[in-house]
Image 1 (cartoon, rainbow, N blue to C red):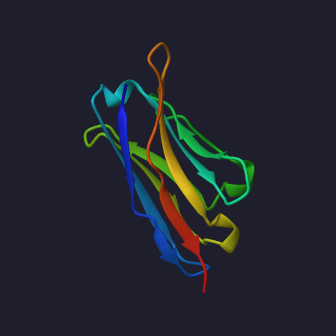
Image 2: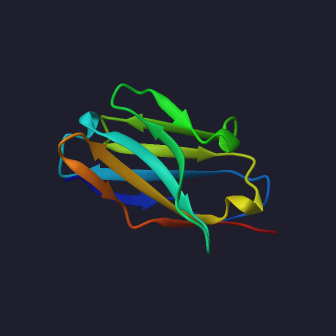
Length: 116
């Protein structure tokens, strides 16, 4: 299974930007579909964005145009660029790696807080 470590979270003012990173190890990263999910207090975990091994992306409808997912297979890293952040974007953001037949793995999460 892939091991995942997120970074880049923090406190940001409304309207600001953050870039989250998720570093993968222990496997052939380029074969994995990767995704970002988030969980706000008292809410279920929800999909933010995904990117396949072929770099096909998908986003939650409510986040299209503000968030961008990308991957660098040479660095075994997936990114989430978040712009025009809103207080409702506050959540713990989790990285996920999935490969058919090999299972799914989660990182430990990184806190994003949007507040003035």
